[in-house]
Picture (spheres, rainbow, N blue to C red):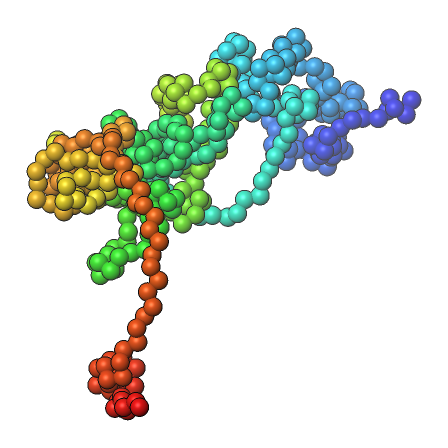
Amino acid sequence: MAEEDMIMARQRDLNRLHVIQKVLEGIIKQVEAAQILSLSGRQVRRIVKRIRREGDRGIIHRSRGKPSKRRIASKIKEKVMKLYRVHYKGFGPTLASEKLLERDRVRISDETLRRWLIEAGDWKKSRKRRKHRQWRERKHHVGEMVQMDGSHHAWFEDRSEPCVLMSYVDDANGGVFGRFYGYEGTIPAMDSMKRYIQKNGLPLKIYLDKHSTYKSTAKPTIEEELNDEGPLSEFERALKELGIEVAHAHSPQAKGRIERLFRTLQDRLIKEMRLRGISSIEEGNRFLEEYLVVYNKRFSVQPKEKEDFHRPLPRGINLDAILCIKTERTLRNDFTVAHNRKLYQVEDAIRASKVMVQDRIDGSMVMTYKDRALRFREITQRPVREKPLSVIPKTIKPTPPSATHPWRSFKFGKHRYERARPIESQP
């Protein structure tokens, strides 16, 4: 009997009951109760009638404890959980709900799926304490500043070796461009930059970290110190020739936009490639071309200003001649040049002591003098030197100088010996 008399009420119900009791006792009017409870007068009158008829139990809503008529059927829940555990294990609730709609035609909200996964123990809430950092406003124009970096990660999981995703994100609208490479170095950086320029144009500014590819670690020369300049890496030199300003971040947090992009892609992109069975850099690059179009349509934002600051590539500019590794080499008297442990014969007659060797993105090599391409060929066979016969050197006993030799004199002597005494005649 005691359990039947118990009323399971919430704190809001108890507050309402307290005010309605004042109305029933005649202490306050129904209009005042409506103002206190932020309810309409009609609703207060209905609550008062129900409490008079049913007692304190009437304060509880009639649908309390009853299943909702809009609830999702248990069969759908079982189907969703089965699909998640078979195909989308490890996916976040948001991405999993997108894939369920896209691939399986099952519409379920991410919050509902999150609740189901947490109840089943397939997902856990995680909250990380963050350091306070000041928010920086986005640039106003597309192409005004582009953040660039490479992410070393197991992008193809255990289906292939880890590789690097070279990515570009526009600071104004968050548009993304990217490409996979085997390593993060000068050639991959130049190749990705060439593809970015061909697609979008020349940006005004590139924001990089201090990786040795992007910032030289060499000591400045005397000439550079006099000109108040620092040594440039090959990538910096190429960007300077293209008229692109370079800025280096002092910490990863300073270029947080591209760091957050990598965190997102390491979750979403990896799982998209897992569903498609992509296991090589070539397949990954083909998939990126179509994936980033959809990604940018969904996640890019509207820039503050509509004008695009990307500049078209000027006519007559050869990107391959700029985005390459340039090395100055000595031209020997026999018109040969040594480069990368190989010997090359220059076939053009020029009056020069130095030539410029360009190692280009496509693996080819060009040799120039005053921006003029030279004809050359590799010397594949070189004459083999015969080993000299082993000769036993004769032991020569040094002969000391005479006592009257100038070497011993005070004037010429290296060690300033005393003047030599006259040699006494021997008997």
